[in-house]
Length: 232
Image: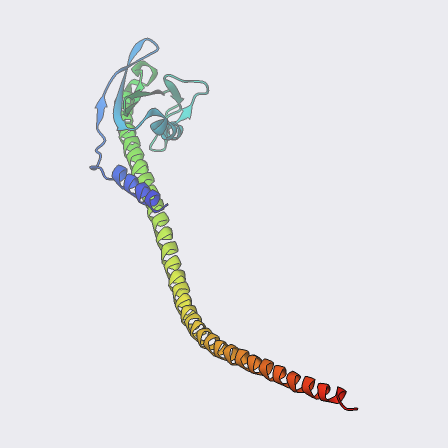
């Protein structure tokens, strides 16, 4: 049980220790509707299922996620700094590669007003970076929480052992006191046994003496009875 707590703490500590992760955003084009869409991507440490749930939640903050869109996810009415761009559409991809997952946001320039294209691209770069920061912080915070849970579990086990130690010390003290009383009882019992043996020996001697006396008395009685018969 104790080893399990230490193992949990050690594993949590191992996975928590890591160099500070820097989010690197790079410009990258992806195919959307058979065309090359400009965009930005970032590679994050973690499997698709780890990154995906937070990514999906993040996209809902970017704009209106179109129902039933899958690859890429289609986002309409994007919101940049509180301003909604009803004409613009953003596309989102997520790819898994080994232990890393790459997220991507991009646009088709023809779907935006020409004057907004450069601004939209700058915002996409910021959004990818912001998501990377949020994901890494969320991941580290999760590790911190797990480490704290492990530390709390060890502390609870430590407290249980301290309480057990106190209980055993009290029990040991009571046992020692009981042993002293038992030793005294044994000593008194031994003395009483010796005294009883002496009394038994005296009782036996007294019984033997009385038995001899009874024999002698019987002899005297028989003698008197014999004399009585002989009186004419």
